[in-house]
Image 1 (cartoon, one colour):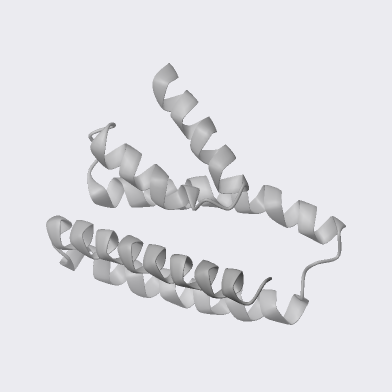
Image 2 (spheres, one colour; image 1 turned 45 degrees about the vertical axis):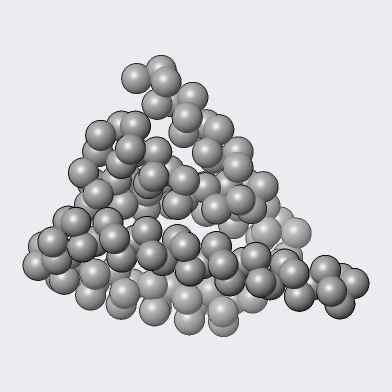
Length: 123
């Protein structure tokens, strides 16, 4: 239990630095916590709510939040969550794990490409 708490703390710290802690948390839970993929993703969502809530407080205080963008994202997020919840029981856990892994690979590649473009342009 203590090992999981330390891992969650370290992953939260990485997430706060913009490393993509949510994906790391799911991988940790699935590989080292022997947690089923669907359960790991649910725990990741709970993990994200707390870290996003803390981040939101900081951004609100610094006035970096666009209210219309928040409403748009909240609406589409709720719709996606409802659709995902309805579809999840019908999706094989192994397929879900592979899709999630593929999404992590694609998002990592896109992040690397974006970083290379910003370094080339001198940003």
